[in-house]
Length: 80
Image 1 (spheres, rainbow, N blue to C red):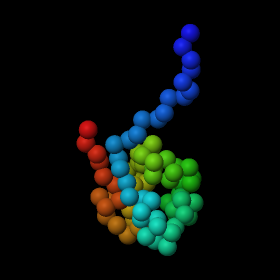
Image 2 (cartoon, rainbow, N blue to C red):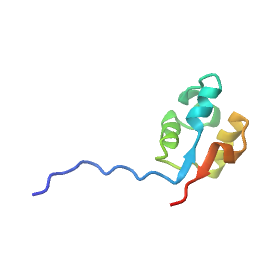
Image 3 (cartoon, rainbow, N blue to C red):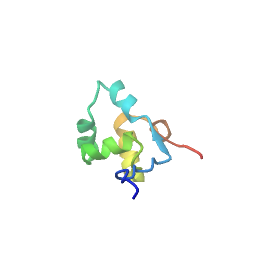
Image 4 (tube, rainbow, N blue to C red):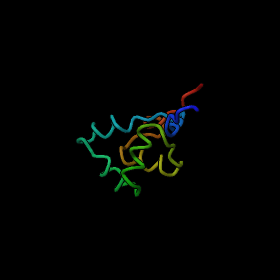
């Protein structure tokens, strides 16, 4: 009988982001602070930063606006 290897790891999304770097460039903003500013949970920001979750287009725009950056400077689509 095969051993259970545990829960499958979630597949990473093809949407990459610079949120972690931008948070630190903005006075070391915490994940919680960003989450509160854009109206989501800290866990959502964690998942987006890890590329485990792709934000809605609306949320992506809110995050970009929070950093004062165009969407394409915060998020990018990875081919492959």
